[in-house]
Length: 140
Image (cartoon, rainbow, N blue to C red; front, side):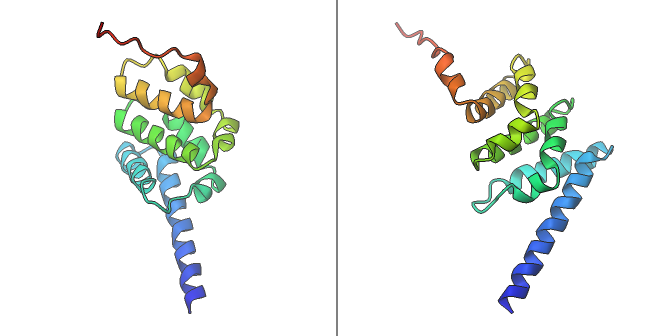
């Protein structure tokens, strides 16, 4: 009985991920924003793992959302990238060209985007932290 429940739970998770990724790939702005925000919130669960997202090509979809004009979509995509990197899947992100996309976003006019990009890059390229001098303290 327990095995059936686990199988059913897995099936539901697979179908949910398929639905979210389909909405993210679609053209509807409202559905896209809702789907990306739902996915970003799901990464906050202690037991969240990106395996299903990765297996279904989700990294490419998330990466492509970094170019959206909608701030909520971009910030949610960055949150998901950070969560994926934090679970040890840096190579999956790198192989999908996420670092190159993040590099182009470092000069964003939006402070929050710049901070999230820096956070993601530090997870994906820890050596970057060593190269960036600390911000000087102006309290002399």
